[in-house]
Image (cartoon, rainbow, N blue to C red; front, side, top):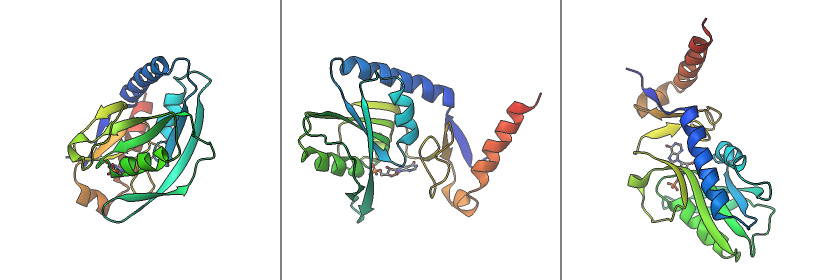
Length: 193
Ligand code: IMP
């Protein structure tokens, strides 16, 4: 049995992202929101989501440093956009314990935005330690470790177009090239006449 399995296809992601885009477009009618992506994981989701939104939105990014077991975060590279008085939508790849997003929201609140909403592609609800409001979310998943579409293993696999679950983390850690082999084998199969 493979230690990796594709859990959400590229087609399913595209369909869900389009739905979220339609919902956000409706909710922000008459407003000029700023999408604030959390680097690096939110890049594919934010890019695809933004293409389902009207042209008046702005896009910016920030990156975070994490320190301490309790998941405290600081801003490593700040966004250039002033969010004072703006409608902000924080875009994340995944919300797991909720610690990162909850600290980030606390930091952003001090900058007096008109409103802050949250959008995440993946919600690991069962792993939550702190409650955090998610306004838009793509998929609710269990507690398996996921890779692809922004989610990484030591910086790799973010560029996969679909989401994969690691069924045996220990075996995967021993041979992290496995996913590339599976993905490339699948791509080669699809190219076979
Ligand atoms: P938090 O636990 O909600 O603070 O999430 C912190 C971070 O953990 C996320 O932004 C991801 O970078 C990472 N993370 C959590 N679950 C996964 C996963 O299944 N795959 C890859 N990264 C993950």
